[in-house]
Length: 242
Image 1 (cartoon, helix red, strand yellow):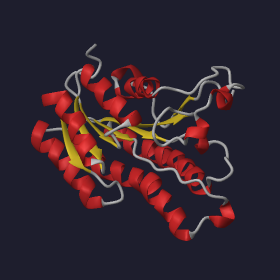
Image 2: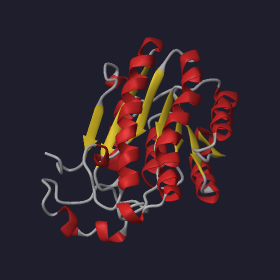
Image 3: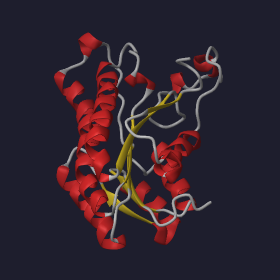
């Protein structure tokens, strides 16, 4: 316990799923948490449960003004920002030739541009706090292709580039930037047909991941235990790509 004592961490997409698991775990470890999402009722409920350790803000990650408000709210409340988890994402499944430009842009704007805007908004505040840690949630779809998900795969590959470039530029400011690459995670974003035992039967750990298992990896990257890690890619996929 206490691995994040005194730290202020912002998490996008934290009203449910993996982001919610991160928010709850971080609060248990002593952090104060900003919960950002477009699911207002769910996000407010999580923040209420966490009490003084959390606040909720409406956050459409595509909107620069929402990010500015999110960061400013944390600074007004707690005076600093030490960490950011770019967790918010959407998934759309369509064959390549049936994917419209609007379909493609929707995914890119949330997953890729949302990550860019989050880092751009939080990094100056983190610099003023003396540094910190950014974790960008990508996917194993950032390493390999999956048919029927060209927009999602493109966005997750892009997050690798965003992470590595930001790590090179922000390291001198004391800001570490790493990416997490989950395999299947039991959240609402994953279609039901991809949660069956048969889907994971061939991988070494033959089951889908729970959100808390991914949150624990993010906790490590957010804590001082990973103080020499930046520009790195952390895979938590049950051995699928082994």
